[in-house]
Structure formats: structure tokens, C-alpha cells
Length: 96
View (cartoon, rainbow, N blue to C red):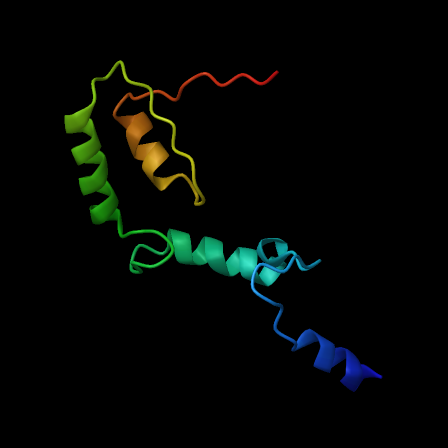
């Protein structure tokens, strides 16, 4: 019985097939991804701090301080924190 369950778990889903698996909510995956994002030695899940700093400095040359910047994506907010430190503000978002 357990062998049959293991075999089912090893079947690769078809491309774009909806599954019940919540990959990003898995505690091991979530912890590992956060560690990868926050490790300043890795240029993987997130960029290294000096790379992020250069990108934020570049953004600062493109827009005025009155600009509101919305950072949409995955990650722990490494760009958002730096942009906030430079006094950029996020736009007000309302939902109906």
C-alpha cells in the first residue's frame, strides 16, 4: 500500500496540469526559499546586496522623489526596503 502511494507521488504532472500540491506552502520549501533570499552570499533567489543597491541607485536616477513605486513580485522586500530608505513611497492601493 505505501509503495503504491510513493509511486503516485513520483508521477510527473502534465505541463500546466492543476494539482492539489501547494508547493510554496510546504514548510521545507518555504523555509529554504526564505534562507536563499536572505543569504547575501548567493546570487540566486535574490541578488547580492551590492547588486540590489546598484539597481536602486539606477532607479533613483530615473524617477523623481514624488514618484510612487510599487514593487510587485516575490521575495522578502529587499528592493522595497532600500527604496523606502531613499524616501520613495508606495502608491495608495484601494480595492472595491
